[in-house]
Image (cartoon, rainbow, N blue to C red; front, side):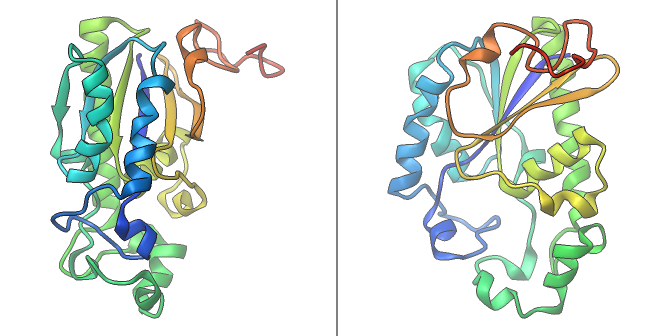
Length: 229
């Protein structure tokens, strides 16, 4: 199956200020986030992307703007299923203040049991995100073949849940995963299993254009010893 590049949106003022932006309106990139987004076209220049799918929130749209401008023929599609977690009444609040909430310990230690007041549960977020990435992987393979590359721009918790799913980790372990603003996480699916090729990468990604990926073979086996690339 195709390889997906999971791009977290660039930094926002909410990120920098320690606020939980959630699905709040008007949360765009700050100056640092704009600069981070501006690096995407060069970082992805060597990669023939089949489609770019993004969350409907402003910060994801803005993150992809430089890439779309550089590639006017790249299909771009919005998908509600990869929107930020609905944090409900926590939306817009300070993370420092939220640290004192009893629910925060559940979010950190036992997220599979966490439901945000007036919002959704973390398992609901993870389920919709996993369904979206699988659905798009099948579509891309049908239209572009199993070796295609495609991009999905979403949010930190959403991407972390996708990584946990690919690695076969229980959702209670997903808080051990970290993906920074404008980072790229790469997952390649094969018939039998997925491979995590990059996690939170902020550098050059051109090597992805040359083969199945580090530590894997074209047939989907893990390269014993780690491989040569």
